[in-house]
Image (tube, rainbow, N blue to C red; front, side, top):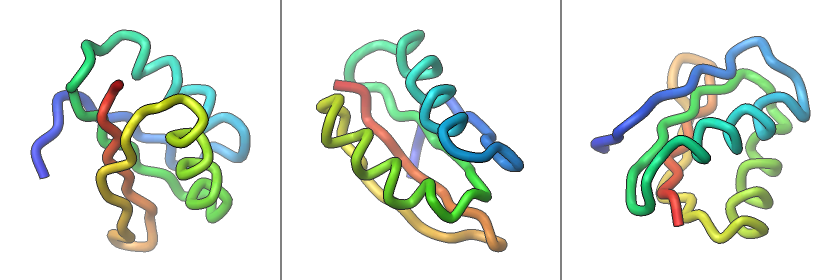
Length: 75
């Protein structure tokens, strides 16, 4: 999937992946896609809830090399 910006949250524990994802999205324009890579298993639930609460679209989530990968489209 194509993306405009990437944020690596590897090694960060809750709530830092969400806090830093929110900051990364704030610098982006509506419609742009942010790729987030995380190692915290809690980020799977957290990212889905974050997307729902903020109105951003969680386009895809997957696992690559024991890491969680999310694609969020800024609302």
